[in-house]
Amino acid sequence: MAPEKSVSRRSGAPAVYAHGLVKQFGPRRALDGVDLSVPEGAFLSIFGPNGAGKTTLLRTLALLSRPTRGSLALMGVDALDEPDELRARIGLISHRSMLYGDLSAQENLEFFSALYRGEPDRGRIRELLELVELDHRRHDAVRTYSRGMQQRLSIARALVNDPDLVLLDEPYSGLDPHAAELFDELIARVREGRTFIMVSHDLEKGFDLCTHALIMARGQVVVCADKAGIDRAAFRELYLATVGMGVA
Amino acid sequence: MAQDSKPGTMRVSSWRQYRALLLKDLRQEVRTREMLTSMVVYALLVLTIYGAALAQVGDRVEVVSFAGGLLWALIIFTSLLGLNRSFSHETESGCLEGILLAPVDRAVVFLAKATSNLIFLALVELITVPLFFLFFLSGAELASTTPMMLLPLVVGTIGVAGVGTLLSTMTIDTRGRDVLLAILFIPVVFPLLYACVSATSVALMGVEGTFGTFWTSLALAGAYDVIMIAAAWGLYEFVVDA
View 1: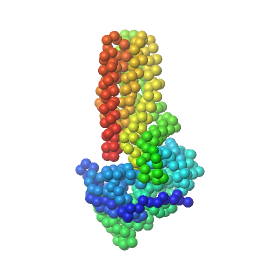
View 2: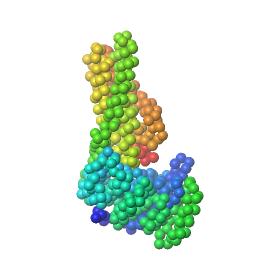
View 3: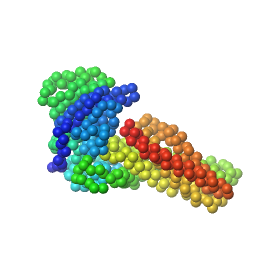
View 4: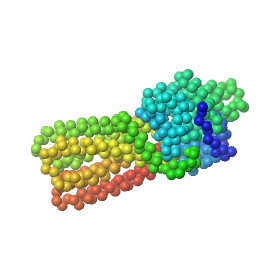
């Protein structure tokens, strides 16, 4: 059974509200005036060619990178003024596990839990390890895990702080079909009460999971819409045309 | 510090985060011994090279007159190796990002990493400094002031760990980071190195009337530590969030 999501501090504000986001690396603009509004509880899939600015956008939303210009509010809180309050409410799952290979699953989760709470929340860690079906390997070094197991454990790591906003950066990268299926199941079990934003190159999977879809190119939003209002074939064509545009 | 049931509704004690970060580094090193082993082996190799070089001059030179310089060259090169490795676990699977995702003051991350580097450097010095004395100074007549060299050793090691932690963070994601760290580290740490070599040499030789130099050098090294570590503390957020 999935660990219960504690009551979300719903504010009625969008989970993500960005206006005119610019991120400049030297002469190159990775984000070039991104406007975005994601409602609470939505699942937004972001597509686009390599170099479109998808990962930069995700890193900015994860508060790992400060925008050069523009405004950003997460869950109704100004992200540039109150980053620490928001960091406690964000989880990130990337194609990199962000786990220490020489530590066990238990030790990794205890470490990250202590960063969020001061002391590890062992009850929640036990629940999360059961959720990702790794409780029987809790004392084994993460280095001995398969890629799929590490990715499952990275879900537990990202949920250790019970986040309201979960960011996924190409989480299927390197997973075999079975591991990807398990990953989907886990995401489905922890969906309730959370907003998800996923960067993906897999149009079919990303589209199946999402409630909203976005295409980026050259640091700009090409289209962002509610899935209910999107014609899948037309979206696919637009995506392919965008990929053909190349990088910024 | 008081805690609520959910992160984000509370402020977590920086001390507890510092303790978690430091214990994680120590636990990893106890398990892998990567940093300590490589630093000790490297230090032993440097001592061997010193031995080969000094064997050629026999009794014609008084090693004690330049032992301070030799000892600090050993410490600086060994610490460079350790500093290069100190972030290898953090970058391996993107773990540093995992830390930076959490509501941790970046200065706390710096302080914890600098402390673990300091502990590892101190442990390596505990092994190599006595060996240095055994190999090169066992036959020499040591001054009664020799134990005073512990002061520049402590002050210098703190500075090396602090500045080295900042610079190794800056070079994490660069190509050829080993070389780049050395290129940045040695010029930046040079004033500290100069002051510590001077104070160590005075303590080892114990020449009457030179203790003004000892205390002046030690004060310079101490001032360097305070200024550079305060700067590193303040700059760390810019470095990791860049």
